Image (cartoon, rainbow, N blue to C red):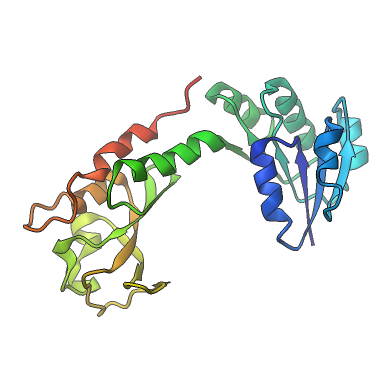
Length: 239
């Protein structure tokens, strides 16, 4: 069974904790606020109230076999940096730390974080494009320029098979899955004929998806091209 520790009960780490409690993992929660810890006294998790976090405290509290740690110290940048550094010195393999700013993130990476997250900004990147589009169903920035987008198939693809559409050659896109009307997402066979009501799960860059959605054939599926907004979200979080 995996052992995962949570240092600091901020909004991000609380959400992660809620998910972890549904899984078969051993969870340790550490926070200086006893009331925050007491809120979880009836759950199956180990808990400790630590006012001043030191490497000796962590070494004493955490088992040597801790697989991963989530660090969320709220607005206390210094505390999150110290906690990350301590966990790295304890040779914890996976250290996920929440950052406030890009400068904060750089320091966290320097002292040992294996992944830095900006929960608020990442949520905005997913939600705002959907608000701006009347057709985009889901939008997920993955890494670099890669995105995954869920949207109804444009008219230019209807009546074509996956092979004849030449999505990869013409648009640089990969179709990961297809969902028929009132159905579930499933693998798309090469000979599958696209029809009205189908929803595709595409992987590519926003420029490549824009190439498909901007196709000038009659009967374009969108009133306003949703992809024109996406480059805005490729900026670094503000300081």
